[in-house]
Length: 299
Image 1: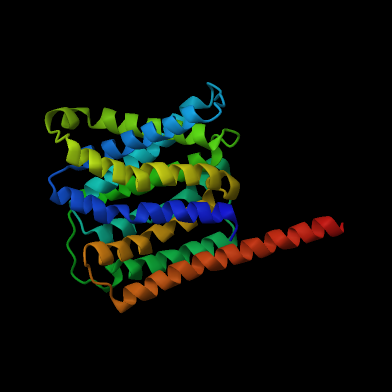
Image 2: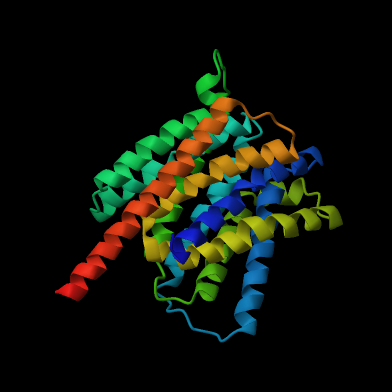
């Protein structure tokens, strides 16, 4: 795997551990609005500090709305996902969130006329099958789920797919520091606007929430945006969307280690299928790229 592939994988793995810690924060009395906002807010501050300490590369005004929109997408998606886990089990919520895999391919096809390859479609099907087993949903029977939770996470999945597409297409020529800072500014602003009433009337702001915010920001709004800002434009939205499904097995492993949730044999099989599909996709793509380079040099 090349370094850009590893960057996207690293960002997705970082996202994967968040759900368990968000549940711990819920147990401490905090709500989704507070957690998602403080996470995005600290992320924006840290990224802007990095920008100020480095060489400042200006961003064209025409690019700013695109970057802020990209940030708003990941911000609202994160908030909706955090809300959904209050209504339905995290394992079910994340399997619905994983629908961004085919949604991002569909958006690329419908809006940008980029038809998915046979490999991408095949890998998507394999990953979705693996996702069903990895989440435990395939082995549950007579499960009754609150429709509100399903609606929240379905909306989060669609907006997450939009984020993947826009992040891979917008700001390709912009320094990753500036891009990440503006994206996270859009994220924090969107969460604030959507939840202003809740944040003002039901706030629990204090040192404990600040501590949670710093921790969640590191793994949710600092490392992933930086890694995605560098990696996604290099490998494209379809591949990025498939790679980001690694978030599911990481989330399940984190829940096992942090929350002591059990992992069944079928879930382990599902995770193995998903990871094998991702490795296979990258192996095929790297071989294709290598062959293309050899053909170009020989001609």
